[in-house]
Length: 246
Image (cartoon, rainbow, N blue to C red; front, side, top):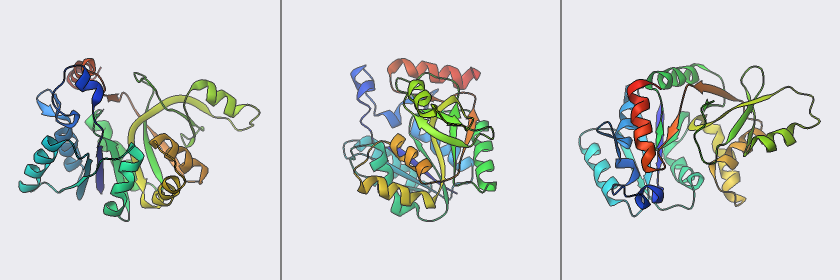
């Protein structure tokens, strides 16, 4: 299976709070976040790992080039993009056909849950499986509604907007999860991605909404907790979670 990492952001909030390293190289328990992801992907039989970084993060580029020299199957794409969805689009031609897993560089999760998630998707016939959690510690969470079989029915910017979308609907759905920023998809999702780019859309959440509109079958896969490292204080939260599972 192929894996991809979106690492083209500037990490401006961390920099403003005194963190000098680029976000991908910030260490959790002594391990850089990007190294942690690559290690986990290798543990889950990664054929190839695609990473996109921006033009400014030369330290990240140098770090990844060293990994390539050591034999790690990383392919680096360097391009500054306006959004994570545009970064994903830049990776499309490299990922090619078949199933793949995409994540942002700062997603922190339980490795055992991740392995189960990858195994389930590989054996499934779904067009996609999205990692979700009911743990909410995000400034702008993306809420996910599901039916009784945990199939995704919608992506919502707030619970209020979910309630409005459900008004007058006869189908039963619940909205108890948020997106964890980890996406397992089949390459058939690229037609939706192309449509989003060509229509001038931006942001991954709009792409996800379009997947539902286009009729792709998306399953929610629950993780106990998924954290993002956006602020300096999040580093300790992430380390505590990795050390204790709480």
